[in-house]
Image: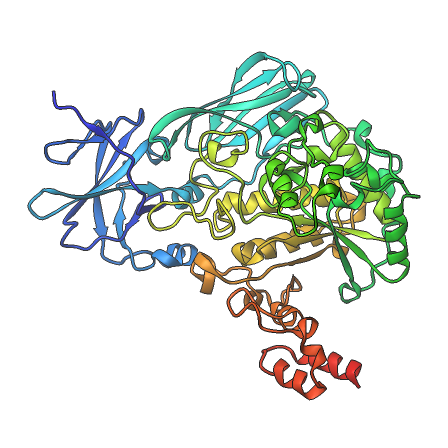
Length: 599
């Protein structure tokens, strides 16, 4: 028998609805097109003729002369010119999406011309969009787990003996329309668990067993190694008077009154001698009302500051949650080096991958506080202490803004502790280019909020932080990489929260972000995105790069040496400065302020 060559094709075709596949092929090179599937991922190319071998099923697709419908081109505008091929109604689509899939084209002579894999988010949204419960749901007598994984061939939950102990038991989940679930006794509460997902992963062209945390986790062990099955509403997790915090929120008459102070949680207290050493650099430092840092914030509050913007505080990669693993530079040794020496930087670089400093823009799981900021990364500490931090800041007159990073993920693929979403539904949560490669313009592993369940996860996560942690505002990193539809749904969902029903006044929650319009989302190529232009008039704020560049000089796309007001132009005459400012669109309001100050 002829041996086959295993292959890992790109993914240039899109399965966009249950009955349509889009592929950018011409009529001459695709006189006929077939869809192939292999549940065990055993397909390969014949060495002799390049044909497909090892498949379980083969389906001939029919060209659609009308092309792609408007519903598809609105969702995927960048493929609007692709040819459309219909999938016969007799095909069991729900079974096929669990398989290794390729489409192949054949010329008029019947010879194989081209082959490629498929991107599935369109058909998954069409068939499996879901609005029911996800994550852990608690009742008086039971706990149920729900996981959206329509491409999985099997899912089980592995329960562990504590945050680092062995497996206690493995329980199979049952599937219903793409959602896997199981119900167990209330005694499951406070167990640690992972999902074991049997799924075809295109990056390996294999069906793999992937161990992953729960995308809707509300608790974690150190470094997110396991999900902690916690009831976030348990009274033991609430600081005193937590449920009454809505009555203590600082007054906010109008969003136009907001002034914001950006703050890094570790830097706030890492070297503050007025905070106990075991609380420095973490959530608990904010509970020290008499500390130097809190006294400083209180003075700013008295002077008119309204909000503190916390840099990322969800579970991110790059900082070990286990403090005993941290490394530090020897500051006494640094002091012995001569000024201008490169030894200081070399010492910092030598331990930079193992020190506790990181801005946090490498998200792993969005819905749980970061363990390295807690006194204990296992169990309830991170939840309780985060709530205490919010409570303490509110009580000195400051509302709390959370920096949310929904535009990318730290990792993808079937391996590694910091890959979660891409293990469960491979290729769905990330945005891919027209060859099937993951886009990285947002830093790495761009997410795709144009997909229904990504949009839902983002909005659900915002509600989690607003209700369970009483966050007062959200700053969206690279908001332009998030779809406008998601932003508007988020605003509507948050502003619908009420004190009576949720313990939160949603009308006071402010949203703003970076509305930069670049890379694959520029000019609405992936749908109407959250750019400055598109967000105008929505009530969602957007950073103004024109004023920023006028003040600081330079810009990401021009001469970095171009002067701004703070970098030399203030030394010129008033008219010289105004002439420079007039070259920058949208600077009229700053000009008015500047003229007043200079006069």
